[in-house]
Image 1 (cartoon, rainbow, N blue to C red):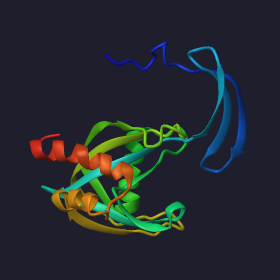
Image 2: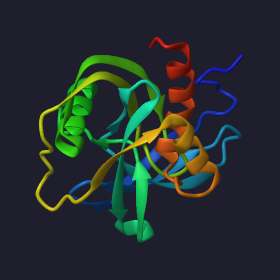
Image 3: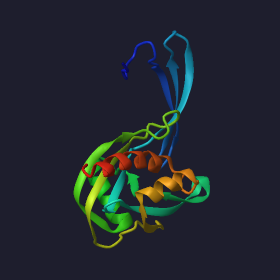
Length: 187
């Protein structure tokens, strides 16, 4: 059995220092007490959180994006996603991002789960939603946002993971969920 607060594994914060205070991210260096009583240092990023949308356009056909990601210097294939605004509910974020980035609104939304993409150095939590019953209303990209929206079957998306066309971790994790949800025909 697993637990999130196993005393034999928990590290306790002793002190905390803000190292970088950016527009999106904040970097911290903390001193922590280890389970054996020793101390160590942890450097990590606090992230406001995000949402990702598995958008099914038609049975087995997904809405995908191609977007340049500066930190890796590549155009990546991803599901629509974006960060939470201050005090924004995850579902509202998912709905906003789907419309802004792809131009679609969905008549049916289901919360699927959450993932933590970079637990070794980031607090980021991404809430995952399945969207169905899509209607196109027109893309509303943010200023300075450039991306291509396209359709891809679930089968092709899975193949794209194995041939290296999809390397985005959050998208790969969501394809795992998509396979299970879409195979069942219910969500």
